Length: 377
Ligand code: SF4
Image 1 (cartoon, rainbow, N blue to C red):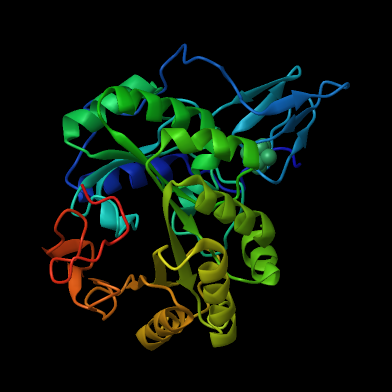
Image 2: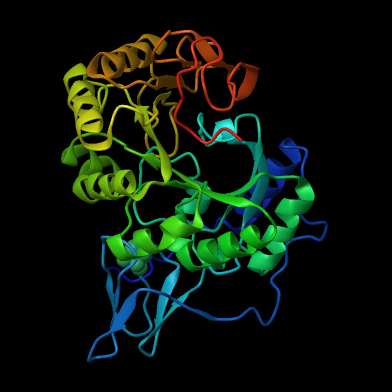
């Protein structure tokens, strides 16, 4: 546990401008009115916590299991102990909303070519030095003057925009768990699926309670060493591996992303051990995306990952038995098409986040009829 850290710099204007710029760049605006706090937004009680004798609380959402004294917050900054009642400050505080190609999450075996209404609140339960969305993941609710958005409003906006699914993404959805779960329920009433983009750092009980609410989950497996998780992410490897095994047992579709960073997690031996573990513990059909790092946030002293490194990681994974290994973050690079594991013909061809050709027939290879695992339509 740690009390809320006082922000070293004010990010209020920065985040407001960033969110507006993101929406403008996407040519999409979810709501017409400007961001302004809405008075009377409900204080929402957190799930999965226990109150201890001295009115401190123990949070059960993620493996950090913060013990939080009265009046203080957990590590993620968005859960606060108010007299022994634990509250989520993230509920309804949607700070960004964009329509994204589902391939951008990335999901390559889920509704190809569809759009996901992608939302986030501030907060995260780890602290990656290379975070691409640090401006919201490492922010506090005070720094983001966003209006309250009920789950019904999120579902309505997603439906009106023509989305196939609501995506919980950009920051870490585990820390806005209650809001995510209620948005998933509201979305379902509108005929929308829910998909989750997560670091996999979630405790067993909330994870299992989430499974029936969502269609697919993407997990960042950031490395295969505890030293990387500890030094670069302030996190833990073993709980992420445990949550991946529970996912494999759950029947919920999932894909894995490995951001490959020069000198830190790009060793071929590490990649081989990771791929062997994935095939043995999760099976050969889970898609694995090896993605290119770009200098960002507090990790700017390394060059972007050479494409050859990404290609090599992919080939190591395929040698280990992964049926669906991909390259990512390098548009046009080999390794972004889905190939039939039987006849090796492409069944979905891509360029970046765009679908170039889809020859699947009812989820099977159009050439040889082999069923391709995924959620295709
Ligand atoms: S979600 Fe995790 S980081 Fe946040 S308060 Fe709970 S245990 Fe701590």
